[in-house]
Image (cartoon, rainbow over all chains, first blue to last red; front, side, top):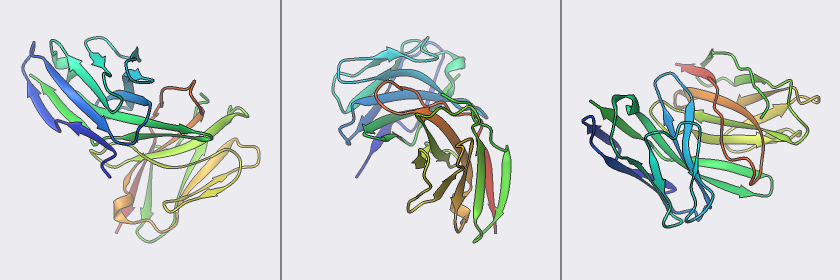
Length: 114
Length: 112
């Protein structure tokens, strides 16, 4: 019963390098989200998806791209990493059913950009 | 989504009940009260939610005042593993509401 799985758990990048963070969910949820959390702050929404093949911008989308080619996967890409993108990244999938509206989060990816 | 106000921090003795308050005086009739928590270095975790009736599950109880302007999350027998930041979120539910907005929350420290 995996839930939401994020890979990798940790990564160190040099400025200008690129990478892709993978989020996988096994709950058949339509909605998926990418957030970032900086020290002492709340979560900020980067991008989200309301279903396979769809993506939309959140609160802080600049410098990131996403893809949702398969329902169970939501990828977050950094094309040219910057030190300002040092953060903890959380993926979530969302269950909406009747009066239920719950987001399930992964364990996070800790990214440092030097 | 309605704004919420929570104390910055609270302490609770291990084994005692932890009562975490939340004020949401501008809540609308169709907004639910949700509670999540975030244990250090982990992703947020859903705890419980309610509209106007009190709710209980295996993790906690949620008491909502009759006027719905405030609520209290109760952890009946706090353990050290309950040390976390607890977030009270008020929001409309359903397909039109995409984002969870986490405020500062309450940092609960359970003390041995």
